[in-house]
Length: 501
Image (cartoon, one colour):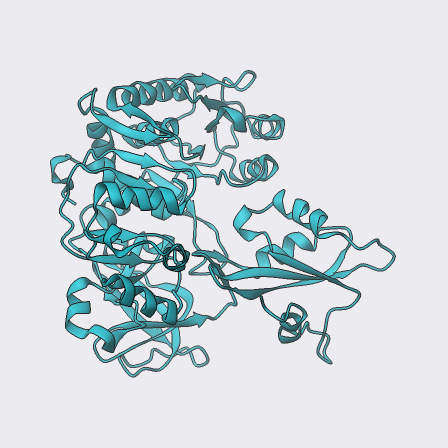
């Protein structure tokens, strides 16, 4: 991409994008076109509404974005105003959103009109947050009763304007992590790294990953920095993605790991991909057999990468140049360090740094120049070869990767344990043909209680967790299998769900 036409820092780039020709398309959504004039007007209304609440510039704004044109405009408005944003996932219940708001204590919350239900309004009132409502027609209103910031116990924003995101789980249980505007700019717009040629043009960018996610933000930032229009989709669907590739003829394509098998199962004709030179793949591994079948059928390679929210993008990638040079010799690698990243492998038992390239497996640690000198300790197991290529070998913390989403069993278990009928529980991974793995939960009931149904447990979890964390299956038992020291036997728990489908 060539974002050099846009001046200054990330806030100035956002303002530059909003100031583009008013009749130029900015967003395509549900068959409608929203031009830059509409986007700029909506952004101006949002900026004025936040100012009217009395929210000071040193307080963060909570933001619950959906894949909608008004959310894209609000995002640009807050960037241009250099307002720190704290992202809250929209794909959870309103009770869970309210719980996040109580923990975050932001001074103002921006959300879509349908999300301003009583639980969220009550939580905003408790923490003294003002409420700003986004309407589908671009209208921006103050929520009745929440027109002004009240109280003085709001959490201060970081010193530099930032976007606060839930981490992906690469460096431990998900937690909110501030990424400064400067870090976003250095990692996403000033990087010289390229997977292939892919020259910038004005063809639209397809955005199916939520704007509250690092990948969604990356796609949107790169698009608006070139004033490229964006196609917003509320979730990934193969027919829409396929039509995008047919119509706009991209040189490189990408998607979640499950996409590879979806394409094979749908038997999409190779001619649909006549413009494609390679597919980039992050968010999780692809089954090697499925990958080989895909590459043989369609004639272009899958280029894996390794990234995380904490890295502000990818730290390693298999580039087209490396693929052409090494070919099958590096199959299974997620590539070499890119954009100023450095890797090291730490022995899991001794804590010593292992010699580079000796193929010993240990904990992956990453340092990225654009983020500073500190090393980021992950919970990924990996090794590097003599040429500096990284190979991943699972997780040290038992995390479950479900179609690219990293799920910590402990996060699900802690919520299950709050259910009055649950005495003990264990969450494990079950193989899934399309998603890689899904979480499943075994439940030991409390004495003298009625066993909960799967529907009751699911409803309980959905009050507190995103949809991606909901187990795909449950086993209700009188006693979980345990060792002589009364620890739950995870291997025996897995057997409760066999045979795997």
